[in-house]
Length: 361
Image 1: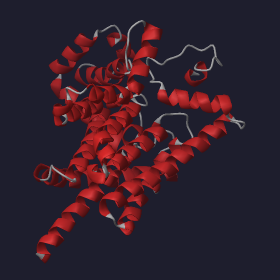
Image 2 (image 1 turned 30 degrees about the vertical axis):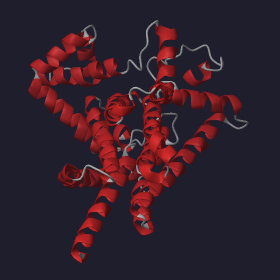
Image 3 (image 1 turned 135 degrees about the vertical axis):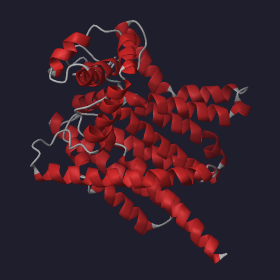
Image 4 (image 1 turned 45 degrees about the vertical axis):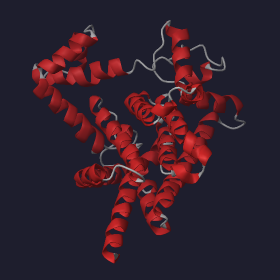
């Protein structure tokens, strides 16, 4: 409905203040101009997103390692996971989100010394891609803020140049569009107001249930907290730290990292069993790689390792942010697959190359 609203094809109220504009706009354009069935056309487009994600993930690993076999193996981890394929059948942001993250990793890994123009504009393109991610899914606000801060610090010598600030402003055009549209609808600019309901109904209600009313159904608890202000909610969470941490880590692990698919129903469904098994293996891999990545990045933070820092940090923030929500299956985390596949593969390749190089010397 929001996509159709762009072209005046529905009388339903737009929700662009809750769901950012980029994905609905793509859906609206497709439904407006496709000569085929709109639903099949959307699935076809999202299947193309899936193929493009494979291509950019492969390209990112190949660009960094120069090893075709390793690139094929790393990409295989992505395309053998059924969850993203299942999500292509539904009009949701995940397929586009995953593609943009794969493109982000691909661009990050392009060396700055390719040519002078690229050296000047790489950061601008990264900000633009993160802005597109933000107006696809509003959970990338922190990543964009950190990226902007990083770019501003490393480019402080350019602060006196109007051209520098002009490029930054252009890179943020997707964000300006969202703020303008929400201002037109609500009378004030906002990226998304989905964080408020998410905190209230997916976190506060569960903390309340765990701390005070374990036998009370969550819908009843929702009526108790529905009139609480944001300050009251945060105060309540801080005053019940043990319950808050318990709910957060349950959301993060059991209902995120180890979750089943958001759309494949029935726990006995063979596809769902495969998805949960793969998610469990990936979870163990993350636990194994966490100290190793910490060690590698702590002692390697310049040159080619700069890209791994950016990719891995983007992945970590996305995973940690998913702990405030629940009942979403694996869809809040599964989209980050291109990030960790590229980060792990390239970091290990760099380190093995360094070790073999040291032995030869």
